[in-house]
Amino acid sequence: MTHTIHLYDGHDSKPLPDGFDKKGFLQYLDQVWQERPLILKEDDDEAERRSSKQRFFVIEDGRIRAKNYTGFVQFNDCRIHVYPRVFSEHKDFSVLNILGHLVKWLSYSHRLQFPFSSIPADTAHQDDWLEAFIFLFGYYTGNVVRNMPHQAYEEVTEQMGFLRGQIAMQPYITENLAKGRHHSLYCRYEPFIYDNLYNRIIKYTSQLLLGFTRESRNTLMLKEVIFVLDEVTDTHCTVPDCNKVKLNRLYPEKEQVLQLCRWFLQMLQTDTSQSEKQNLCLLLPMELIFEEYIAGFLVEHFDSLKPRTQAQDMFLAENAKGSGVFKMIHDILIPGKLIIDTKYKFDLYEKKGINQHDMYQMVSYLYKREMNQGMLLYPALAGTESKNEVDFKVLDKLIQVRAIDITEESLDLFDLKQKEKMATFVNNM
Image (tube, rainbow, N blue to C red; front, top):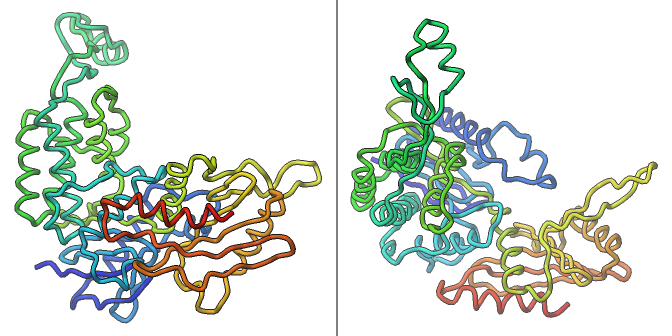
């Protein structure tokens, strides 16, 4: 029987089930942490970049608390869901609605390439993030393998009694010519085949997810994908294999499925130390999701302001040789008007103050850019209005502290409502 724990990132803690293998769980998370894709950038937390120990959870006194990551973990018979903290005080949002928001935010991200920008209506009954993600995979992949079977030219090297394609000289010399079998050739050619790397990746990913789903509809969809690909060779696949596949741009649906497979194989780490158990983990940093969402949304919907993301064309100082040192990297730069620095924090007003380092950093940026306005932008809890907005004056520089609600009751009106909210910040420059 699966024990399920629901958490909000950076928020409350929950008790672990009796007999929970804490040591094994921490070892597994350390493995996931060390093998996670490096999606951090140069100016991210140095401790986070270099730590060899997991920084997803804090486990103390038999309780578990999530840090600033969202997603899920399946470890033995325990499934842990971590939701964005912005929903922690608003209980009217369903699990599906929260997932819909995550998909919306990720659709604006460039560093976290999410393979779809909407959720099919058929997911309406899903109340488990892992099952919802598996459903999305089965839904999109099933449509593609049924309606657009993929055949491709793929290089094959094999021993033959006649020449086909070209001679593979290295294996021919070492395996045949050196052993007196000069009449037998090693040939390299590219047949147009159905049993290709693309289909093998899809089949392997489907088999992987089949081992985790407990929902009958997901099981049925995954088995259908595997049945359609019955003639395809069973083989272990990895992210580098996904990178080898070349697809025709006329079929973006196939690229979407490949991106889905890449995403799962990259983010879903499996534990191979126990043959009878497979553990699975997908956890994404909310700091990065928030930053990427704000930046991507401004670029797409406020293009007249010419916003630049990750602007890093200037240095803060020069050394004795006249070379630039301490490169400045701005989350969002609106040239000549505003520098926006996003911060994923929720207690910024408790002490009526802001992190001192953030203030020093913003002031130095403004003076170096010869600009007058900067903004520290934080997420607000769902359904709350921005309160206690603070403005700081440093000589002739104005630093605004603002919080924005990045959730909407209706996902159909998400872009429209979010545009209205962000306009209140950028139009008052």
